[in-house]
Length: 109
Length: 202
Image: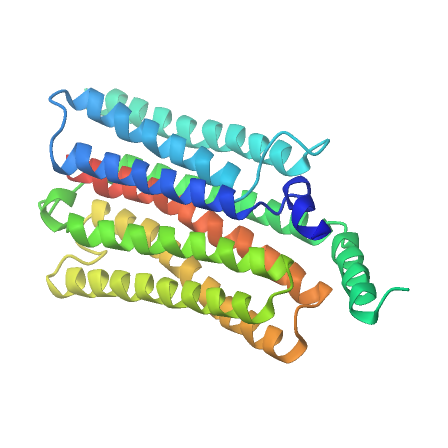
């Protein structure tokens, strides 16, 4: 049916994309859980990087396969506003934590 | 010569896609502002989560298998909402309603599990007044849970509207907005799961 074949290009997605996204999300969740709860790594820093990396990967998977936030379909305002938000959140969260750590350091030594 | 159903399908298909996506983009901008809100609450948690003030840390109060179940429930619900939207866009109203109902029940289960977790913590004396860690925990996880609850109320509303009016340009527009909201909540939960629970028990 004409409608079905068009679904890929108008931001609606397909059954395949949801299934891929779902399976990948499950895998990433289980991997992160196992790494922490079953102590798969010795090094603390490695585990943290691993689970944070998995979280970011799962974020991307869900953005692409569930929310269909891709670089196709012309000037993508959804994608641009998302990138803007990421920058703002980065400045706000990173800045706040930097300030609070500095305060803690400068006021307790 | 076209029969009426073909005409109607083409007309509603065109009408469906003539909704120029303004409502969805506007709602997306709201979601972006919600990201900033959650970002700030995460930042506060980041600063305060070590301040346990003699009370318990995450390791002592988090039940990891329980949290994993909550995580799977929410993830599955995000998937089933996707399935619902596929049926919505194909105008399969009854199938869409079934997937919406499944999504609702999963979301409701998530909220019930979370409320249960909170009630237990409060009854043990580990409520939000106990320490800065617990205050920021309840604020972060609670704000997310509140969003899910509002989403559930909205979902029931939309299901009633679809029953009453069917899949029109308007109801589809609203279902698309809720879809953004629901997927977004699962994305926020990825980070709650990772930074609060997983890092909390390390």
